[in-house]
Image (cartoon, rainbow, N blue to C red; front, side, top):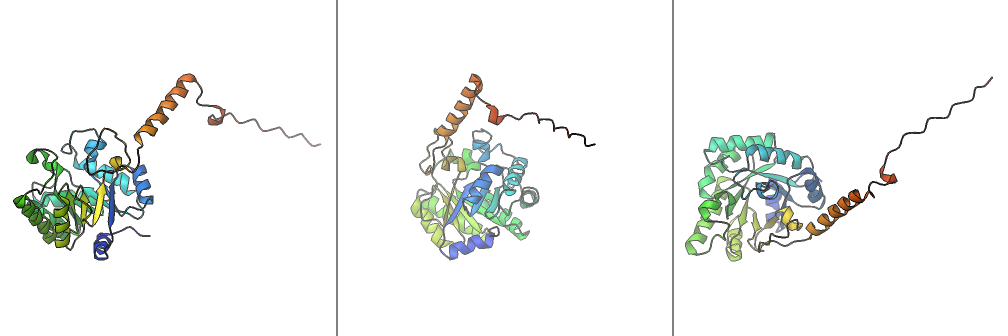
Length: 278
């Protein structure tokens, strides 16, 4: 099966098929989620928080995204690869946005790029799409604007806020985005936006009315038991068994019971000498 394209994903909305998207940041994880059948893989700037240990996404660089995109892209066989454009890689000008997107495609193996914002980034989306690079937009809670938003808060509550979110979604569609992520917005509003658009909506904390869903892979797999956002369903609880596996390894090394003979290489026995024949 060939890699999914932006056109394939738009057709999924037309065919009323839900889109499953998940993040990945390394080759091994990307190989696993691709084998599991996800439709889209996002190399998100969330890597700043879940991979680099930063408090937010603002410190992630374009070089970071290129590197992780390349790692993930090498593993994918069927899933579509979207790579985030990090903070200040597109906000200065449409020309800057185009150049940054070009690097993510040429060096980061992206099939499409994602950038945050609605009406204010329409010109950047138009420039990128005009150069032949598909764009996924992102409205609602936009983590790169966390300081302006006053934290990680639900967006679109209230009549004016809901109207602005609808305007943002329509603006990115008009600018040429082939899909849009709706993050942390009321489910009723997300359903209204989804019905108003002809491009797919991908929800995270936006209810079941979206055309697809996206989760951070670390959250999906339960790799951080201290993180409990309302919108996350853990499909596994892997932190505990992983910790126990490493604890057992440490114990066996300390006790001298690992490695055993079966884990050890040995010198080859010398080949037997052949008897002389007279």
